[in-house]
Image 1 (cartoon, rainbow, N blue to C red):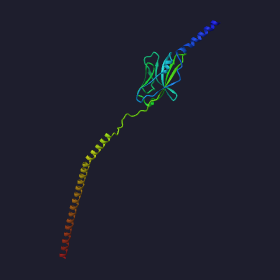
Image 2: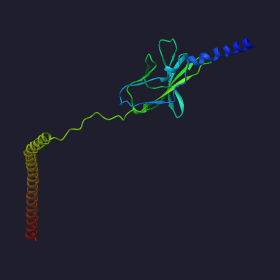
Image 3: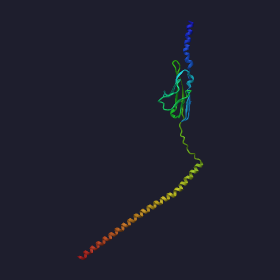
Image 4: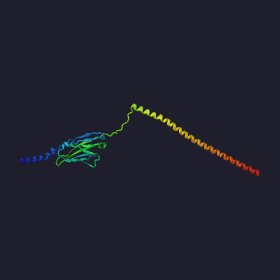
Length: 218
């Protein structure tokens, strides 16, 4: 009976031993990474250090408590496979760290590295919190130094002085044009008035002569 119990204990130990030796529980902690906007971020997979007997590794982005796949790599495979639903470009390093490039505020959030193990072995995962800094415009605002202010004032005065003669010349041309127009109108008016007076005079003379002829005949 003692031998049978020893054999049973040994068999149970051999069954449990692989799970204990190949995988350990990852500490419940979250790495926080704060990269700059438009830069590159490397997210470490802490779960790999606690998982020796695994079949694949998957990186997820946790969105509203749901895992959204980013990239997958099977053990022994040379290349990783990206999920179609993930819009950005992602890659894996040899230590299974996730590499994200050209970051924006939309990339901020929680990421999970899942180490899937074979049957009978514990699956492990680790978490990374990515906080991308706000994207700031690179356009520079000119500094108002005394030299810049003096140069700006000089340029403004020169442009103002140069514009005065041009404005005066334009006004003179406009005055000349207006004067010539009114002179032409006055000339036409006087000429028409003279013609009208001449016509009235001739008409009066004709009427007067007709009246005299009638008086003489009568």
